[in-house]
Image 1 (tube, rainbow, N blue to C red):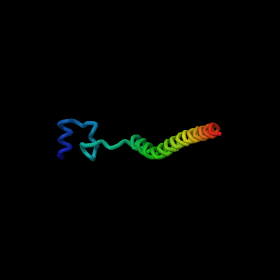
Image 2 (image 1 turned 90 degrees about the vertical axis):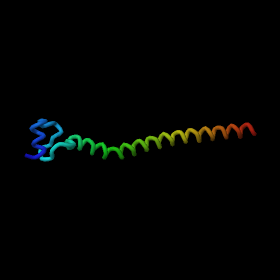
Image 3 (image 1 turned 180 degrees about the vertical axis):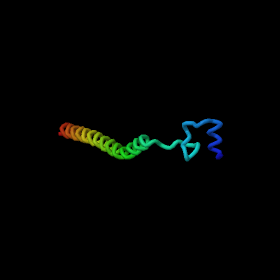
Image 4 (image 1 turned 135 degrees about the vertical axis):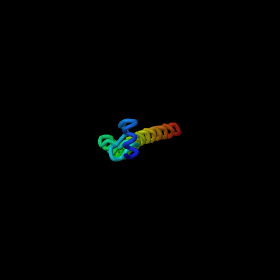
Length: 81
């Protein structure tokens, strides 16, 4: 009788027991593995979308600041004339 078989007799089969592999870490379920794989594949896409959105927002702010500077420069020139 193997050690694992003796443990089964004494402790009973636990949910952490995998037949043929014995006691230890549970293997990942297919669904959990697929979900994690999908998350990992989508992560770079999500990061690119967030970066593009941030870049778009920064461009809008830059354009607004440039418009304000042009307006102020125009006012300064009008006052100097």
